[in-house]
Structure formats: C-alpha cells, structure tokens
Length: 153
Image (cartoon, rainbow, N blue to C red):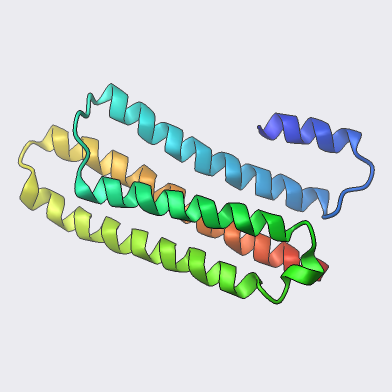
C-alpha cells in the first residue's frame, strides 16, 4: 500500500494536502493493518481455537476505531468545511482508544489469575499487545488527520 501511494504521488503534480502528510497518513494506516495482520498470524501460529472476551472486545474497538477513522479521512477532502467537526471526531477515537487501554490493562492483571500455563500467558500477551497497538495507531491517525485539517482550514 505504501509503495502504491508513493508511486501515485510521484506522478501527481498537485495534491490537495501536503505530500509529506499523505506519506504520514499512509504509513500509519499501514501500521494499523500490520498490527491486525500480526495478530491474525499469531492466532494461527499459536493455534488459538477460542477467543477470550477481552480479545473480542479489543477487536470490536478496532472495528469502531477503523470506522471512525474512515469517516475522518473524508474530512481531508474539504478541510475548511471539516474544521468545525474535527474535534468531535478526535474525541470519539480517543474514547475508543481509552476503552482499549482499560481492557488491556485489566487483562494484563487478570491473565495471571486466569491462566497458569506460562506459554499460554505469553501467547495471549502477544495477541493483546498487538490488538491494543492497532487501536493506538488509529488514535495516532485521528490526531494526524486533525492536524492536517486544521493546517488547511
């Protein structure tokens, strides 16, 4: 994805926003996808057959954050018009990210009470870390979108 955007930008003389900002946005989107993919790979490699409630909840938050982020990317089409709505968008994504932090922290404590097998604990800690990182990157993207919108408003 990053390569395709870079090639397209190289062929485009005028972009609606700074090329550097487009690169940053693309890289953060790529990071979100990488964390989701890394989670899926670990689930397969670790032979996880049943998801935990915290993992399901974190996945639902990723979905919500991705949906909000998709809406936020639309703001880049008309930054002047979007400037009045951008703070609401950022608040929504930050709330989702905070919920992810709460679930992640709670599970970091609970996992040692719930599981006794150290290998299983390590497996799940790796999965939770990547799920939470994907949500964090969605917040990073929301903050970058806000910055770009306000710069061009």
